[in-house]
Image (cartoon, rainbow, N blue to C red; front, side):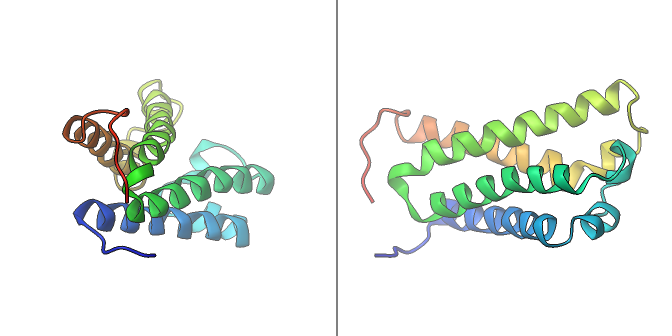
Length: 142
């Protein structure tokens, strides 16, 4: 049974759909993704189709988790927690690379919409959800 989406559900559905679409693009055409994504991916190293698809697997898992969390109150906190762990770790890696000069300073802005924003949104979301729903051990059903 599919339930109506609340505001959190819409947020997770949108972010999850974007993440899953990104993953599908990575699987289907890794070379075009590598060159055409407006995030300066080539600045991080030479093209490797296997590596692009490997990372696509992570984005697919995160996107699916977020979409699942959109419709499942019962599993929302664990699904968004795992999603936030990947997205925050990914953002921290980008921060490190930019701060240490591995890529040019313009990456602070290039990475804002696709790396930093999702990490902040999911990190803040899980903090609010855990606080408002009584923590990870609260009993909740769909």
